[in-house]
Length: 464
Picture 1 (spheres, rainbow, N blue to C red):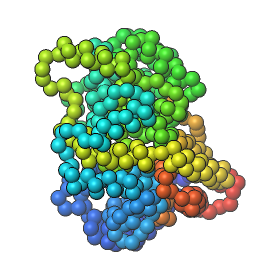
Picture 2: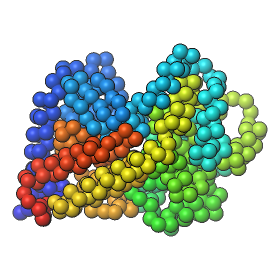
Picture 3: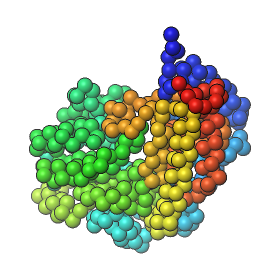
Picture 4: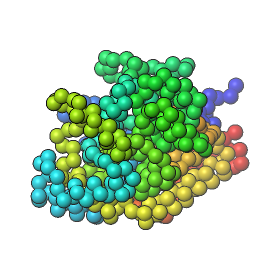
């Protein structure tokens, strides 16, 4: 009887490699073990934000510093950082223009709920960069998506939104739905959920235009919210013609289209939207837009702005449900201006794109050399290896492609070889500060990890 496998590898071998890598990690991180290995006092489950428990490492190492594409821990270990704060530091840690802007603003006050000269310049830069005329600033992409969806419902008078199965748009309630056997259900694992979210949202598979058309035919969908490439699951690229069909069908149905570029800004300086000529009614960008300072932006067309003005004119005084006290604070606007002007440049993005293609090619070469039934996907500076055959076309296929135990072993093996990738899925980012040597080292570490998982037998057919 053949042993049970995952991603073409025996589960017993995966477990053995993970245990060996775990022991190696512990030996390399004694100070982090002392400080955080048994939980950090004062925090629920020992961490200040529970996502910090999602790494493959036995306990999180404690960061000493980070600069550019290099991260250092308190044990003196140094890593080529391809996680980059899960996109929050996509343009590198503490880019000089951002650090200088933060230092300059810190002596002038951090927040006062009034505009600065940076605010004025950022408004111009956003319109110029992303092609939409009306903007608001929020603190996180979750906030921006939530506010934009509230506007969509207000101006259309419709109650529902439509999401693609397997999507990710932060912690917006209505997006926590998925398809199971063709039916919309609340996503498992939600805490404290008191409402049936399926009453607020429709769900269809990505790349399924007939299903999208049928869902919009009900006439009750205010907005389709979409990443242009699905990134929170194993990455799923759009089929040729999908985005043109999405735009045509939403317009025919009187439904607004929101493009969330929080991850796909990796495509280039204007995101996937500008690179591929998309025409959203609403647009959201969070994470790296202020160089790592918490900030997000959401924009919309003149037509949406006019409809929103009309609705507000008919609305009695009260709280709009949009905005938070620290939104658009002076510090975040200073960092955002520096990012847009000096960091998130066409030249920087060209460097990122070129090295990301080199990384993707290197990973593919390893996979082909050793006969692994895996594939690689790239969207600009964002690269992902997927431990299953591809390409994937929708969220259901992406979920089935996950290989958690195998991914954990690979992640920890890469970390022990000096390369940090994102704990969620197998995502890697190339920054303006990333070097060709770091990319080559990551490819070499990946090959070493694959060989260790397969007992080092020679190709071809290593993983048969």
